[in-house]
Image (tube, rainbow over all chains, first blue to last red; front, side, top):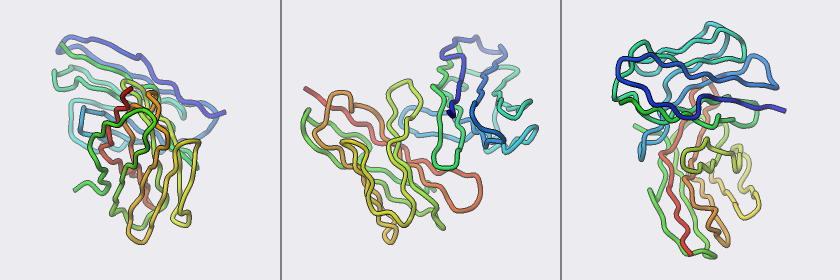
Length: 110
Length: 112
């Protein structure tokens, strides 16, 4: 069966520290993968999407970056976090008939 | 401009009552439309998916309708339960490209 895993679920990081959120999928190959940020009352904002290993498209300029070192692995990173990076981050995989979301990661930058 | 608009932004109903959520979109050409339920702090979970040729689809107490001519969809919840309290998100996929167009969601609160 197809599943998507995202971690960590919650983290509190100081300003200026690095970030790494990881997402992996199972039960498929060559998936389209997405990273979203969700702010209260503002819906889902697309940050990055990837159609294959090493292929990353960025939707908005920001303090974040993404990488896809393996077919079923998608990583969201930052070298130095800002307060404005706080939020709820979702990884998603677009399958043939639906979109699968990870459980989300709550990031609080203090 | 957001190509998917949902209404109302928030809704409070009594347990046992019915409600209808709306989704209007301008995405064209259109491939499919999905409704998701998202509990606070959790990832969205799929409720229904409809292609342009489908008019209605049910999933338990959830019934989604689609009018591809007017580019409108609705999600009807019957006999609401406290566990229905969540955000409901409409997602529209175009026929080409990788973009997924999300509505901002409707926040539903079911009270005893």
